[in-house]
Figure 1 (cartoon, one colour):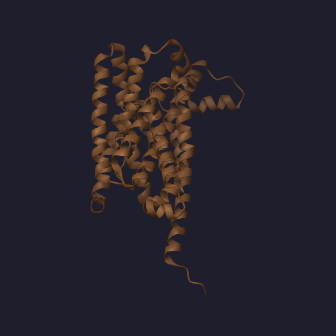
Figure 2 (tube, one colour; figure 1 turned 30 degrees about the vertical axis):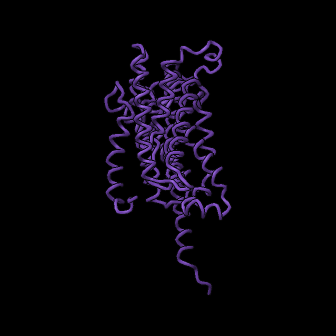
Length: 355
């Protein structure tokens, strides 16, 4: 009889659990998507519209406008933003080998915000040719540039001699957030009334302004990041053993770092540009999944995308239902839910978070 090592059996159990979790999260995402299309201030019936569509009948004009032009782009935006923030958080935590790393906590979201605010306030000063060329993509592109600069600066600050200091990373993130916040405040100070109104609602986080043009402008960056992230899984697993060990295992560590930085910058930059400030998704979702299915990034990154998309869609449903027909900014909803969850995680794991 051949004995099976208990660690091998445990790994097999975790893989099966991760696959089952993926199917459960896919079902949750479908339910959240249905709720996102069905719930709103309007009394449009999604079931009736689908029945008309399947029967070959023309959908009522009002229902078609609300479902196709308002709720569907909002649904797609919410899915991509939630998945992008959660996956970026998981990649950043794997890159720094620390569960406290989060796009919002370490200043990456602030860098993306500075880029987006620059585009909103100073975009009118661009030459007409460049403005026409970029069009709706101006804000996502500038947000990507801001987040990329923030991630790169953070990594340079926190890494010395091939070793990344967690304390330096967190303090550097606080400093970056403060500096970008000051620059953002300066731009807000010189903004006109309409720009101030746009920036106020943008800063609170919302999917209310989702349109097909905005969604399609930000989608390439977010989709590219989401498709590239799983390719980093094996490298991030090896990196958990340390950079020297990962190098001896044949992982091109420097290339892995560069790709991880680009993935986080693209995901956070585009997501922040199109939805504004939405916190806690990038830090809470990976934590919950690690507690449930383990730290293997091959499953973690995929499941983070599914859970992040589902949670943001459900938060959006809450945001437009709590004070209907008005809408509560979605950033407030995620903070109300994510804050206590994150506190629970800290209390549960406070013994293992020393650095």
